[in-house]
Length: 108
Ligand SMILES: [Zn+2]
Image (cartoon, rainbow, N blue to C red; front, side, top):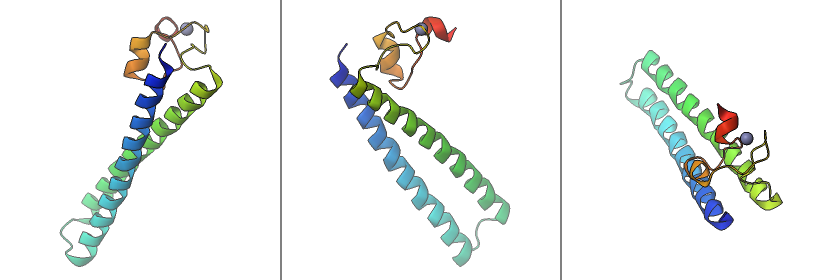
């Protein structure tokens, strides 16, 4: 298995998620500003947008922590092994989601 390849994929994903997270924060700040100065959005709209942004941010943070754990597994040599049966996880599966810890057999 090409561990460097997966390290690269994981680091790219982390970089892009962190960038999205920053953008999300900026977007939320803009909504708050709009409300104060123009009052274009109703309070309900703003609350809905905030709730959505918050949910997205939580998803990003969850994915980030899973990816960071995958990096740790790359370091300690357990990356790519199923945590249920300890068999190797198919590379194609890792390609789609390098943070996965369970092989396709144990998943079903
Ligand atoms: Zn398994």
